[in-house]
Amino acid sequence: MTLFDEMRAVGALKEGHFLLSSGRHSDVYVEKFDLLRNPMATSRVCTGFADRFRDERIDVVVGPTTGGILLAFEVGRQLGTMAAYAERASDGSTGREIRRGTTFKSGSRVLVVDDILTTGGSVRETLTVLEQHPVEVTAVAVLVDRSAGATRFGDVPLFALASQKVESWTADECPLCKQGIPLVKPGTTAVS
Image (cartoon, rainbow, N blue to C red):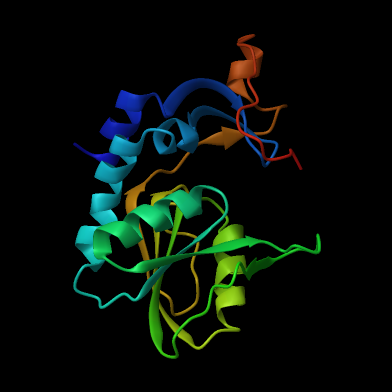
């Protein structure tokens, strides 16, 4: 079963008329939490990450809040490693921090995992905070790369379980608006 098959089965891959966090409109939306709230489906999906990185000597799997935490935990469990979390800065500033007593052994090999990659903002923030620790980031792994390979992280390789180029439009050019199809604002990210 492919990732998209699994997402369809749990209702995470949606079709309709959606307002994306960018403010653009699209006819496809991935609701990651419809997948992540299903532990068995999440475990099955994370096997793709574990199988790919099993021979890479990963010491710690790190994920950004929120979805990345669940993925980091499950991938770490399947690889038999520790998991860590890059949370929003506690002082309210931009960026992320690794806290709650988490430390890294010098030279630890880190795999960064996240859910849906569009611009890579949360992954970049995670990579930035990891620069403050004595670790080697071996790769970034995501469920879905919505940039279809356009988003890069310097020399850090990117692995995606699936790639999806999502067509989107401004409100003025949206064919779904012109057809009078009701607009739905899914998720929790504020519209910019």
